[in-house]
Amino acid sequence: MIINHPLLGPRDAQEFTYLGDASLIHRPDWQGEDASGQFHDYLYLRDNLAGQHRELWFHEVGDRSWLVVTRNTLTHEITNVELARDVARREGRGK
Amino acid sequence: MLKLKSITPLGADEARVDRFTGLTITEVTERALVSLTARNDQADAIRDKARGLLGIDLPDIGDSAMGNIRSVFWIGPESWMIDMPYSGNEYLARQVKQAMGDSASVVEQTDGWCRFDLEGATMNSVLERLCNADSANLAERAVTRTQIHHLGCFLWRQKDGFAVFGPRSSAASLHHALLQAAQSVC
Image 1 (cartoon, rainbow over the protein chains, first blue to last red):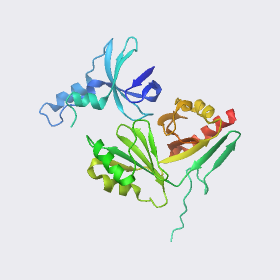
Image 2: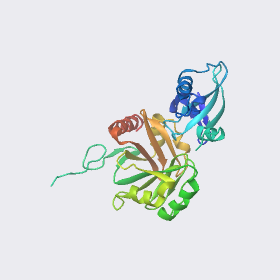
Image 3: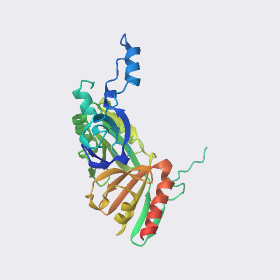
Image 4: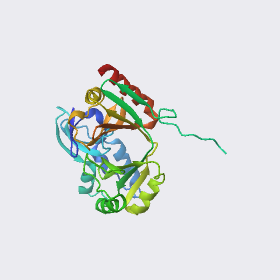
């Protein structure tokens, strides 16, 4: 499988490690009143999609960047790759 | 007084040189390395500060800036490695941090890495057996990180050859891999 890195171009998937669902970017506020319930859902509840899936990959043997890869779990076709930093900022997670 | 003596990443007194027909593998020591990473939205600020401190422009993605003494190569998004002779730059990390202030994270990398320089007609044949990187098509000054012998290594195209940086604690493994590939080619 080839991941088209937004900065470096096509790279072999063996250079990357997989973390999981890109919704992990949305870590709950640990000081919130319902933090316990929020973290339960954050840690344990996952959508197990058959189809387009946004997921976090780490370019471990490369430039060490985190990526959000949109991959079809049925065909493994990758339709979009972005730097996780850009996605997080766009979704209001950047400090 | 303690009698301390420095040793090379391969554990010897002198840097090792291995010569093959069409390839020379030279262990390079005596280099000071410091990584420099811009903090949030500070990339432009550290470019200016680096120009003032080092006299060179921080290179773009996958590129390096090579001076006679100082070099800088790109290692990641808004992140660079500064490479200078160790002698006279023992406190390089401190100097860089003072110049950058809160706009960058600076990490001492000297002794975190070992370096082997490859030169000769067969260097691309050796590297294509060892890693994914398309070494034959890397332009001069280009740098990429790639996997060699299960180790994350920087591969840096120099004027006459390649510099391979690998984790120092695995220097012997990396050296072994380079020798094995060289023996199969040369």
